Length: 76
Length: 174
Image (cartoon, rainbow over all chains, first blue to last red; front, top):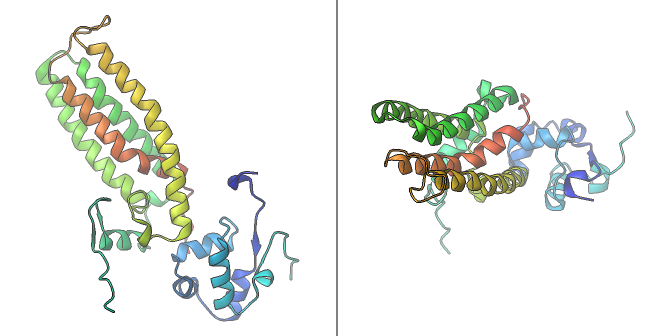
């Protein structure tokens, strides 16, 4: 399977970020990416590298597997 | 140990740190952030670059000169706007981009290289067409080489931005 055909990676970044009261700019600055990249991640339009996923999980004080999944998260 | 001073000018890439940072962080609304206008810009640039090369077939030298100079000026203006439309991603060095932007830029370069290789054949064909000793020799003014060279250089310079501008989705307001 090519990179472009990869299964989507679902995430709960938006929810975890809101819980901590962080803006996209705050999270972007903390993990060292452009603020637009956070938007792409939250909309599921970009799948992060392992390194970025770990950094996001660390800043959002969550485990990576709580934050990211290859299966859709149940609706709250 | 003294830290390395961050580079302000990237000579090889032809950009400055300030230019890239301003462009990446620009939040002002612009038509160039939408896919439709960006694609129109790409199509216009392609037409102008092709017209610059095909101007060699204008027989009158004066008309040819009056045609090619505005075309060249248009090429430069379009080139600068194309760079702006993709937030200078195609020219930016790795150290000023994040992983998504680098992936986007590199994917664009792969397509741009393949396109350039194919389009180079068209230029070779054009040169073969006007070579004085060639079987298909078409009489053109001796300054025609300049047109072909300028058109090809503009193509090389703009193609990475053209590909990115064509492929990038409309930006969403963050």
